[in-house]
Image (tube, rainbow, N blue to C red):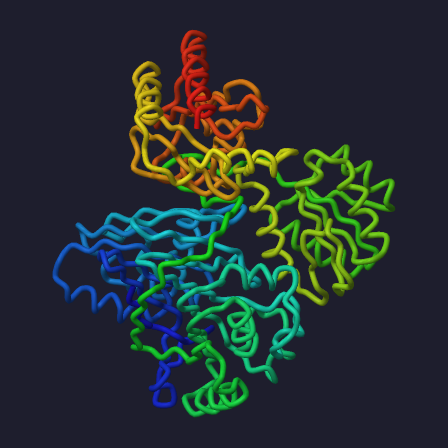
Length: 589
């Protein structure tokens, strides 16, 4: 994987004699895979030079543009990216979806008549727009993971994994715990989750706009310090760190002094290689074969499914004693046309939660706030999934709390955090819970010694029969392991295993009878699942649990299709009969 820096400046382009070495153009990074897939990370003013370089290739161009967020320094180069104006070129543009406008509508805003002489309609290439939320999807051979960042606008970080290597792009992001801006300190909560997102990356390109001494005057502006970036990447076992989004006031000499100071304090014994990204710099990555395993609950949306965002208004329950904080939160909510339900004491708050069923709760960081949080969680069902945010200084720990909104904060900052929390809830994808007796089930599975074994005709003939009798393009004998589902037998796919978090079969083993889903887009557990919104675009699933005589359900015999369909009563019976035969073979193992 080759990474090329075309823009490394933050906030404002600053080309000139004082920024020659590190560059004056705003954020734009090009990633090329060994197979030739091209991804452009952000489209600041650096995109102009990249576009001119690509035009010199003299052939139809295809690529993908990942927009972290739509602040001007990250999209201002889009109208000057010449390949978008050439017929025959094909580009996919990906970026965060807000609560209202789509990515396309937001990008079109900067090219309205009042601001720019050419509209978005003037683009002559084939351009497709994709609205993203937090999760995982694929671009050709690249696996892309997204995570919401801590910024006053809804922003996404990207992690690309391909060719055995990984690169993470984090622009723009501020420490959640503000004391971490100065460097070393315990990583907890969202800062720890941020480190896990970067875990083991070969290269992290991280916002480092401010020095530790500058940061106190910039709290809430949504940017990191170099000290924070180094601390997080060391904790995450990152190999190389490229500091980027350089402040417009930091000329080349200032950057040199900052880097000398940073590296002198880091010492020579750190395995992390740190450098300040320079415009024109190229980094070649040769990755390791082992990648850390992850499982996300939420997936990016794909417009190919042609599902519009819900038009229903969101509802948030707020209970804050501080009137000034409550007013800021109210401003943030009303700006996005969100209904506000005002809570009171613990008992009143619980009753209002029951009656209003809000998607998000914002409570004060106090003993009463924590008690209210625990009282809501004790209700069970949907209350266990509703995000609960405590506002104030983070003190102690409470397992029931989703996140802390640390004071002070602006209405704009609160608005972006609220958007992220609501969009996480809105994504329609639920991983299956672990049932009681999971340890015993896994022990029974491993006792069979079938995981990672060679294909066997005794199983393969049954999957062939299932595919033929039920007229399904894909049929599987799936075994649900601790963090994956592995296919002992498969027809219609070359995939050998998938993460358990995206597994339909992990849901099916929780029941006694066949689980049949005629159209997965109508099911909130699966509509935004990666194998639904992306390849192989599953639309129908039917799976029958495979249960041993001791009662342990090890997996399923299942069939899948790429179009919605129904099973007749006779077909359900056939699936059950074939599953019984698979169970007999399992018992013989």
